[in-house]
Length: 208
View 1 (cartoon, rainbow, N blue to C red):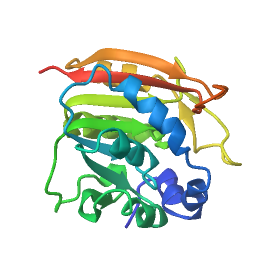
View 2 (cartoon, rainbow, N blue to C red; view 1 turned 120 degrees about the vertical axis):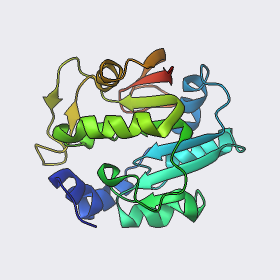
View 3 (cartoon, one colour; view 1 turned 45 degrees about the horizontal axis):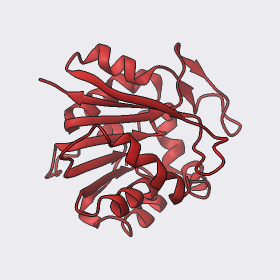
């Protein structure tokens, strides 16, 4: 697998493998998703961009067992765990920048989900990723990331170019007028019961 950016190389390698050890708790994700899904109807298939070991998808599997889950993941160690949570043929071992590969059978899902991943994408490649997200979703797009009204880079694990905050959802809606905001909110790292990592989330609907 070849990569265009330093960010891809890091997440595919040991840097990404180390992240597995600090991946979000299942209980917090079980609390997170029901409220975010309240405005989304008829979601029978979903795909997680940057699935890691599948904790988000595992939570969705418990909450919505009839829903077909798919995932894209760049790190091979994470993929080894991801296939324990969703069918192996639903896993794409790939950089998001290279998705979909030529042999992908399914191309569109009712809901596309990206959570804690856009912040780690090289800013020069964001429009490409936005295009892939919007193309992949038939009905809904759920974006959950760190928010900042203007683009800013934040030091992350000793690196200066691995975490970027900006208004991701607003940029998507500006680029794609067909994407309409349905719901949004914030989850807090100091929540006494189900903490997340100061994530702002936005649910959009595709209206062609």
